[in-house]
Image (cartoon, rainbow, N blue to C red):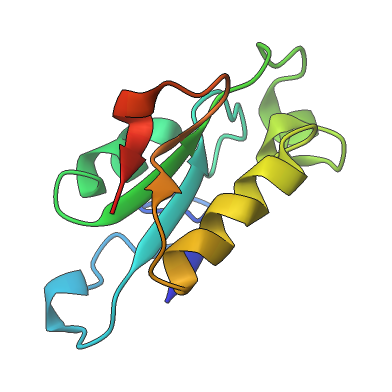
Length: 115
């Protein structure tokens, strides 16, 4: 299961999202892909970062987001992995196929890779 830029925290307008989902009950591998600087109010990085302690995670880093509030969720923003799509999907495919994959998408360092 691959979750990209999902909301893992209860939101007053959007509901519970995946905040109460029991990921431990799944019998399949789970990969979370989240942009560290996503300024969308519904998908903050903190809750995804907390899940990364027990689930496979790819964190995408890029420029600071210039938009905030609902505008930060629009196409062309970090919410959509803008500018990092190809690099991110390459690591997702590596994870799917059991190859070495990067936990961080930015300028790679050898310590960022997992097997």
